Image (cartoon, rainbow, N blue to C red):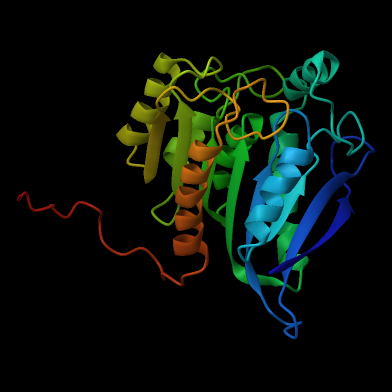
Length: 275
């Protein structure tokens, strides 16, 4: 499946720089009216870098219209930050200076862009992201148009330190506001220094206590950024990445490409115990 790459700039309520939404559209030869489900890809603190672009292209090649926002339009243009000390410092600074409302508006605009694209099937949107993008993918479920999310090592959920004021409400709201037609996959490494074991336990318990539909993985000896194939400082694990992408695509294929209809039942039916 071929991929066509483009972008659209959208005005926002936060600053004069428009939000750039990168777009990757599948192309099937001789089928110009083909339609596909949508996926929002959220980047790390460096905006849409090479690894994020390749990640998005890989998803699009499986038959999804993919959009990825350049999230720091509040401060800078859409160009990616470098994987160096200056880029890291700037990304971490912008991450906690950007208002939560701006993050949420970006998510809304990404959904809106998908609905404007003739290749989008008009029905199903999923999301994914890594690091900061994992948190934004997690939070994207607050828009009911997003029905599923695969979050790679999402940061700041347990510490509530995303956005201006570093007092975000992502875990509380997602735990209480997701419905039975939405689901999550959260993937961490056991050696992730950005999210402590206690923090991972807190996230898992909060989701479980609120009956959220989720899958929770802790991969032995995996580190933060283990799926980033560039400038990962020797943390990239290709084999584990392939395993995780298989799980992500299972979720996307089941939730986005299949018309499941509305959820029915109370979810409390007893599972028979047998060997």
